[in-house]
Amino acid sequence: MCEANAYLWKDGEEKMIFENVDRVQPHEGGLLLEDIFGRRLFLDARIKELALVDHKIILEEIEK
Image 1 (cartoon, rainbow, N blue to C red):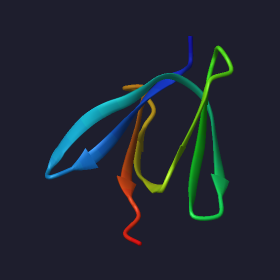
Image 2: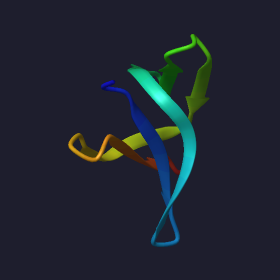
Image 3: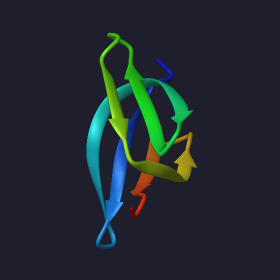
Image 4: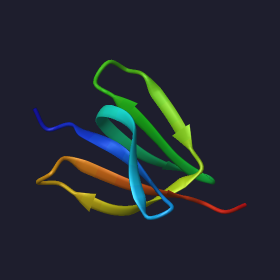
């Protein structure tokens, strides 16, 4: 399978926040993540790094 897990980068550490991510869509003020089951999560975040071989999407919060 080609899905990735989403991690939030905070205080120098990665914390997994969403598994089996199939789609990442930019939206005003953040990102919409959707998993293989159709569940969605909206975050006020931006992509910090994509580690595709490791199946990781690393995000960081947007300061408002």
